[in-house]
Image: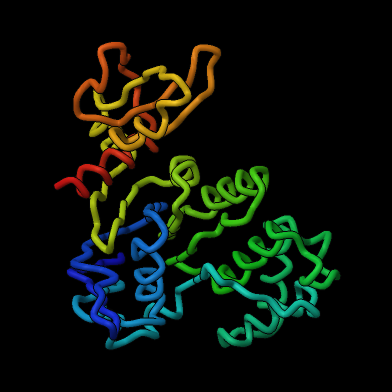
Length: 290
């Protein structure tokens, strides 16, 4: 059980990166969604015991991780956004080095490494230097190092940045397969990644937690708030100034907009079924306008 109580983080220049965050998790995938600068990576570093909160408490199975960080570190897997590799090592050498840093070794660890390379579809390339790997392969290697100790808490920060669409789909499928009985916290600013994987979604903006709910609940918030309207191309900038727009499609008759609004934005607008991206923008805009 992971429990986050009233966690805030203030940096030396006085800015609050996080303010009064409350979250609890027992198993499954929590998608941490928000724009760049929302505080997602700051929260991830606190949960990974790399940074400490200015205020508040994080407990793992009832134990304060600030007082006893090793209680969590023993069962933690962490893939940071800026995951780096030693390019001249092959996959096995790199994972043996990562295992040694975790205090792991011996035959069981070597067997675990080969098992993970098979699971993550890297076994065919284990002899190649990791410097020759594609972005997707490096991310899979990052997941492998995070799974070496078979963690109960897996923290993954912006893992699909820079991946092509096919690699992103593979990665999302992998996350779903890995969840099982463990807690997976997956941070991203890409709504489609969250939509495809998360059992629960926590939306962060400007360091505040806007909503923490399952996707169906968040979608219901935007019901009756999403509209379609076609406008001439030259009116796009004016429309952006007036409305929250979640999508545009070019048509023969002009631009078809998806507009997120509490009220019908135009007499010719038609109501649409909301997507998760619509709902995310609705929640975010509602807080910013409050």
